[in-house]
Length: 250
Image (cartoon, rainbow, N blue to C red):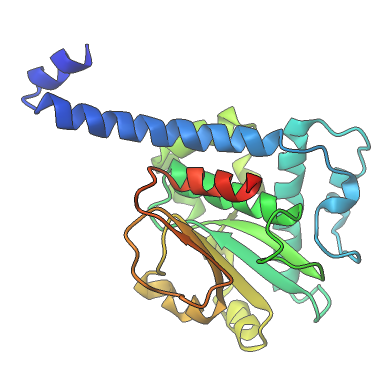
């Protein structure tokens, strides 16, 4: 069927099919990784932040209060609390000795980019990446690198989030982060950044470069951030999600 459709559109079948298979594999890997994160572990309600002392909003406390939490609600609860925590943090409502770690995908925000950012943040929050998030007062938050209103233009991402039981209302989108506050935190060393699905910030975000402590990507290596604590760049791998999965179980 695929061959006949491609011939009917005057497209060389084999290269186009390879591309189609690659895109399908990327979508499948993204969905699989989010489902894996959702069921990765049953954590106690005290494990949402890596700090032993935590500041929570009332909504976050209610989200954490359920003792027997299902694996599907586990990821959702992490996202809700990480969003609430980040927003409180950026309003100056968190102790000064607490760091904010943002895990951010690329500005194209395809399924691979969104899933890798969410899952890597989740893995870091449960102690799977101690090289990036050592024990201490740290809040880890995934960031979707587009305006919230543009999400509906990425129907593959919308579908993936729905399949994984993730409510987009629980996600942080980059334009929602106040730049002035981020710059303040940058100067005080209170802001850290982990990049997924890209290994160099775009020009408009390059002012954040000094905050980069980690990179996980499958695109051509630009040679940026050589001193990052974790730097995994392998363009022989088909998806960033595959690299994130490897870091989670490695």
